[in-house]
Length: 166
Image 1 (cartoon, helix red, strand yellow):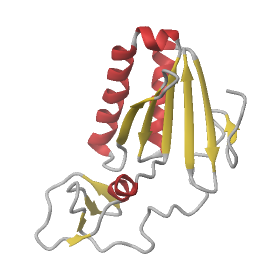
Image 2 (cartoon, rainbow, N blue to C red):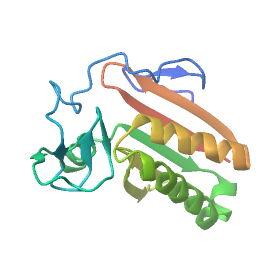
Image 3 (cartoon, rainbow, N blue to C red):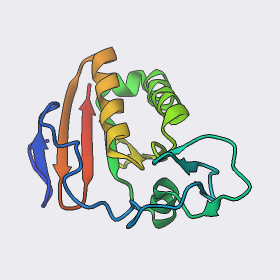
Image 4 (cartoon, rainbow, N blue to C red):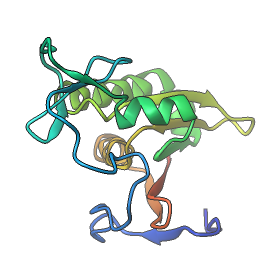
């Protein structure tokens, strides 16, 4: 885990980097007209944020940042899970990961899992549309099961890599 990828810096849980310091290309360039509905997922931009609500008849149509990332296959968060404990309790741990997403998604339509993939080395990689979701999943795992948790943030691209080993 000691090796950092170019452009990433290791951070601690409370470094404050999660306040986005750079322009995120997946956020609207200007203020969206209200209301706006995402034609892909049905989320509605209303009162300055994306939310789940009934779609007004007069809503403008524009793809939301989460659907845009999914379409481009460009995650914001990467959560890597590995270790003997993880392998022995994989189903239970993945339930916690999916339940965390489900909980977040009820209030935050832009926080979604993009994919869950098995790596060749036995690790599992979960990609997300939001850095905060990846961070929250890692912290939930660490809280529930302990293990080693570390974060690597690339401020230029607003990408977060979270590693949990146990």
